[in-house]
Image (cartoon, one colour):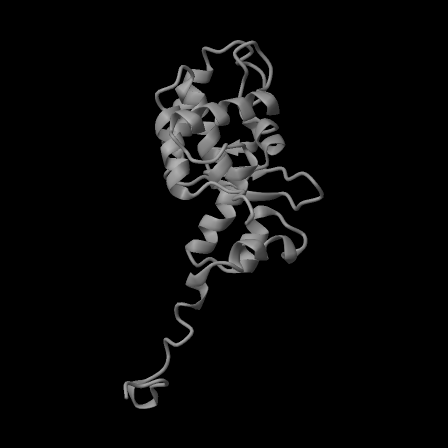
Amino acid sequence: MHKRKHLTHHEVEQILGVADQGIHFERDYCLIQMCFLHGLRVSELCGLRLSDIDLGSQSLYVRRLKNSLSTQHPLFDQELPALLRWLQARKRWREADSDWLFLSQKGGPLSRYQVRLLLKRYGELAGVSIAAHPHMLRHGCGYALANLGRDTRLIQDYLGHRNIRNTVIYTATNTRRFQEVWGNVTENHTICARL
């Protein structure tokens, strides 16, 4: 049996609950939430800049890596409060005048290693049954979108995949996509009617 490589929406909520109680709760909550909601790789997360955010149009420029397609995402209603809270707290951080969105307390951008450690620790504190790491948030995003019934092509574009084969892993195991397969059958044409 293969080891699960994603965090469920429920597990992400548990981790966010713990992160909201952490020392740097404004930053940590915001970065975990954004990583999940936008399906970011850890390097994409660490590479986010203040200039990628347009609060006026409520949009985020997602600079994809690994030959993926960069795109503009909306900033969602559920993430705006945490983002605004972090932007306010960020003003008091060392090197707050830099363009990096997520800062290390020692200055400069938060590193991939620091994000890995944060997520691992919050996952353990939240009692998540698997060892959490940042890429599980990206995969979790893909599975969560598939569970919401989103179209495979939409998920492909959202995650920046050039090849749809990288996207079908999220939709192939989703039983919900078959939920309406018999939905248009009328009572007069019932297949497998009661005997």
